[in-house]
Image (cartoon, rainbow, N blue to C red; front, side, top):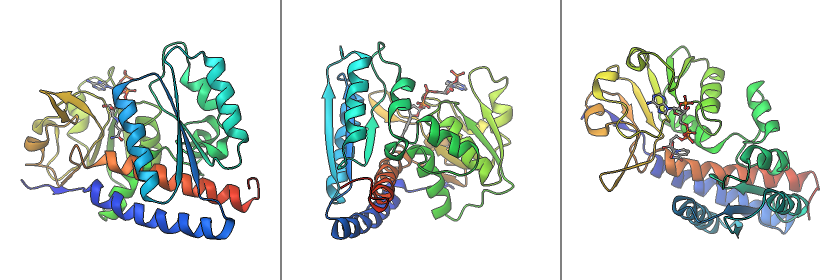
Length: 288
Ligand code: NAP
């Protein structure tokens, strides 16, 4: 194997220590610890697991988290009422509506209703617009985690050819904007892209967020490239990314493992966003 590992697990542990120190300082100064409300509708097993992992991470860093677990039959209006209640609660600094949501609920409507100051997922229109105009505030967690991984490894982004596969609001679009802001030349690919491999072979930095196991093979990668695998898939009874890890690691310069790459960084950035949101709210005196 030639590639060096972008170790998200180790970096996430470091971010947790930083966040724990910030949370302790806020608690000492304002007498209230940063608090998250996670809202889960239905019983999607992956979501139940994610929310539990997030709650554990909040516990480890001395922050509070409350989980609101609603039945899959919950009406959109009922969920919006809960969001309004959480917006008004001074001891809640971050609100996390977990996706996916049941079909009667439009997630965009939900994200539009979260107070932008508490939008720790960065998916509401205000935080998305801030990112678009190049003045990021609360940045979506997965893309923020990817940028932190690149920065920590000392990977230069400016002037590089970056290719992003996937155009979701949660990963593809915001990571493309962050890479562009860091002066990469960015190409976005999706299911209507012709000759995907022609694009990926040019990439100095390849971010794959398609949700298709082994979409990226060795032949599709430029030797020495930085490979960021966001995908989480079940393949042959195991967890797998979107990249054929063993074969691609033979030619890449850097690569994220799955698990242990982007996943832990996503949770770490949720912690960071929540402490950042709490600090802004406590400082402005909007809460207790
Ligand atoms: P999504 O909303 O399903 O979007 C997938 C995107 O990939 C779409 O834009 C789609 O194109 C594109 N795509 C799918 N198959 C493709 C193909 N064969 N060739 C080119 N483009 C293709 O997914 P998402 O929410 O962004 O998540 C993507 C993956 O990342 C999933 O596996 C998810 O579980 C994982 N994820 C991981 C984390 C983490 O923390 N590790 C966080 C978020 C997501 P179209 O737009 O044309 O349909």
